[in-house]
Image (tube, rainbow, N blue to C red):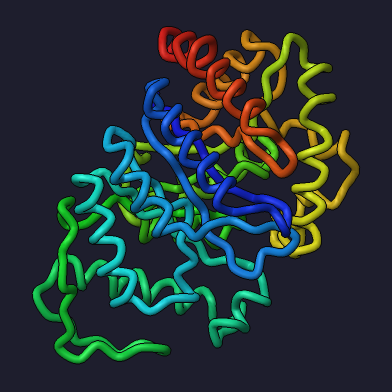
Length: 337
């Protein structure tokens, strides 16, 4: 079992981002010191009411400062980007991390982002697939000629190649069944999202397994899942302490329209008590250990990414969660697994 820490860095507008960046880097420093396997950073644009530093430069700084950590871009929104630019930037990250970069990919769902980058949600799926295909070719081939809907490679080459060959592992973030089938067909694994209920994941696991069978692939050797987590002496106390931050976070997600792209049986446009149902890792250390082991037993996952910092949480509160996880949850899960 491996464990990572997600740094979203979702801070209120008006905060001094020099201070917040220093806090995010302190989180990464503690992650390395506590023995976590990886740091993850997502990417959104125009993310009001939050602000956060961008993914690639942040991961580059983590690579320079904390070289033991694996870097996971979780996830890059491929339809917004040109493949040659990403191929060179992400190969550079793989070099900076000495071959410890993970290429997380996603389609996205926000019209404000699609419009800003000159595309639409309707075109996102095809653009995603051709962008990923082009990046992989640029990493594997000396020169690439390929015509895409929004790019043209004419005997183009990636100036640098990643250390990992034929390229870094590709984790597919996907909420919907169509994305999960795409993950089976094109990805190294499905990166299970933090929002779906366990009952939904159980149904989608069957979708994933059938899709893997259709292309002749086994279940992935590295199978990650992300979950929001909060530990306290009791589950009731964990819910009480986490509630203010999670309510703000998921209110923003609803405003962005994320609830509209969830599976029809798993919409989180609901009150907080219903949101908690079967979705997050909350409780005492022993309860979180059992909940984490249940993920492994039910789904076969072997890489758990913890989201332990949300809008409004202090750095001290976040670091306390990381220590609790590293000292009481991770060892017990590894021993039992």
